[in-house]
Every structure is written in C-alpha cells, then in structure tokens.
Image (tube, rainbow, N blue to C red):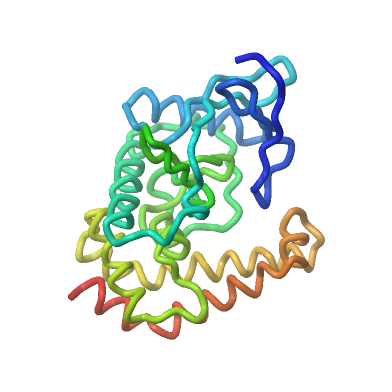
Length: 252
C-alpha cells in the first residue's frame, strides 16, 4: 500500500484522487464514515461488486482497493446479455445492502431526494462507475451512497446503461431496458412503476444542475456551464415521451 502517487482522472465530481500501489486514495467527505461502514458490510456478506475499504491513510484520505480494468463507458455498446449481467449485479447489490443497518447518526451525501428510503443505494450506477475487470465487474465511487429505493437506483442505471438518451429509438431501447429488468429479476409491480421513476430520477439530475447554476453551488454550477444540463433535460423528455413504449417492453 505504498509507492508513488499516480493521479486518476475521468470523474466529473471528485478531484485529488490518486493510485498508490493496489489502492486508491481520495479526499474524505462528511459521508465517509457511513460509506466505509457500508463497504465493509458488503465485503463481509460476500458482495464482490464493490471495492474494499481500508480506512484512512496518514493524510486522512480514504483508502480503497484499486480495481484494474476499463470503465464500461470506454467499451463498445453493451449487448442484451451484458445488460442482463448489469441487472443481476444491481440486484445482488440491493439484496446485500438490504441487510445493512447504518449507524443512527450516519451522515450521507444524497443529492437528489429519492422516491422512498427502503435501503441504502449507490445513487450513481452508471457506465462511468462500472469497472469491467477480468476478475469481475465492480461499481466504484460510493461517496454519494445513501438511503433510497431499489427502483430509484435501477431507474438511474437504465438511463446510462440502456442508454435512454435524447434521439434514441424506443424500438431499440425498449428491448434493451427489458434485458436490464430481466437480469434484475424485476417483479410485475416493479415493471409497472419503473418507467415513471426512470424519468423522475433523470429529471432530478437536470434540476440539480439548474439549481447549482442558480446558487453557484459546486460542482453542479460548473457542470451546468459545461452543458450537462442539456443532456439530462433531453434524456428526461425522451423518456417521458415514450412511457407507454417502456411499459409495453417491460410487461410484454
């Protein structure tokens, strides 16, 4: 866990992240104690889709196991089989977090209020946070984890992994959404509710950036200035315009 510090880039929110040997060092946040407890729980119950948490180093930084492999957003478009695999991984994650009991005074950093608070969720399940390592697929960047619901988390994942972006084709995207839901093993009731929650979470991301622009709160103000809000608004409008298509694809 010693050696030279190699800067790691690619994130839109985190700065000061470096690799040291087989570890990643990153700044702590108010949520670090709660997130560290969550990651230790996931390791204890045998969930391998998250990095191991090693505490803090001499500089007070978080220390996490480094997962070597490409991020999903640098690889070719996922096949339906890949989407089913992502769905299974998310289901395994939620089943594992459902048994986690956070401390009564746990502090989280959830930026977009979820529809419900049933269990602890990742809140940023996306291709830019999925390392496709040879040893297994691993979700990274847990700083925004916190209370939420299964469908809220899965709906956000659908935006990035299907993907559901402006200019898409519902005839193509619907079956891909179905593959993700099938991999998750989503119930009939969940399939009925999922389309609306996909839109809600995606539109919530747009609103967060707009609010950041209005208040100057970082990093959201910077991301707004870089044009990210236009993407999220276009995606939300595309999803909303085809809610019936998503419902048919999921329930057929």
